[in-house]
Image (cartoon, rainbow, N blue to C red; front, side, top):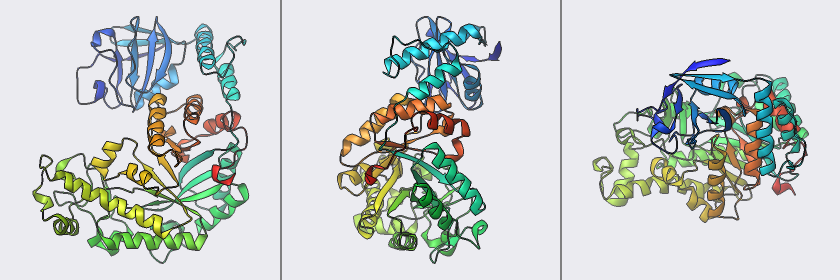
Length: 485
């Protein structure tokens, strides 16, 4: 039996639901609210009648005859290691005790079999296995596997040699992936030799991108080069900003480095010179390697949740805004009637670049990684991706819906899809948030009913056990990309 101390019905309000960093919290009916009120960055197990009957990520309903156990960070990891369907959980004073044995395994297998029947994966009359490993194996093997869909993954290169690249490509091929969003320009550096930007020092003397391209071509995996746009550097300004310090964005308080997104430096989207540079860099990339796609990331301003640290009030941006409106941006406050004009100015700068990319790269599959909550994306980041869909500027969209709350992920996928049904949505999922192999497969399956594919962030978070689960189940049939039909 596993035992651990908990916080019961927290009253602290600094975090949603009172669940702080690395905390293990129990919510009972005495909490006074019907749900926990937590955010998606954790895991919750619902205990009814002393047995785990459900688990998810946040804002779980508190049962009449039980409680919810909720964890973040290290506590989340502990929960995922020790609790499962059917586990017996006892709350005694400020401790929970968890019992897992053959009986609880049978109960868990029965509960999961019932869920499989509800999802239409398993016939309600079928004889279900009685152990966790058997029922999970049956679940994975019973998942339908489409032959036309996007099975994508983002990847920041860690491979140091061509042979290591070959091993990674083979791993992706064996697991059924057909699309690699490979990070080729980030932190102000390229992984390949370029006339416009500095190649990362660790790759000098060879061209990793050429190796990736050759190996992926042989494996039947399509590469869409993943590029950072206005994110200049992390911890340091980056090679582009070192050459052109006048291109850097600036916080309202005059500092260059973001504090909300700690360590980030940003280029100034209002500057034509910045946009010209990025267009030239991406044009060289597409021409040199013959890519027919381009994936834009950090197509936004730095986070603007905190007013004094908001981006970007560079001298150039303030000057351009005053020329357009006659207003001094530094004199505005969030309560000013004119604040909306400043937000619109930021949106227009980002949208102007997306329009330029669309015009400069005709025939190229153009996509963007975006924040799914539209109003937050617009107000905080200047990212009006709904307008990009309305204008038909993109060939597909990858909303970054990183949550273990599958219902939320599906809802946000459908929201994005409904804005322009003609532009496909390939949902970005976050296995880095602590998915078990089974839960990752379940989320991909749930999203498949709303979207023609998914992209996982990122390869470093997808372990061998996840790959085996995908290969055994939802990726077991070979699939071609929708535009290759």
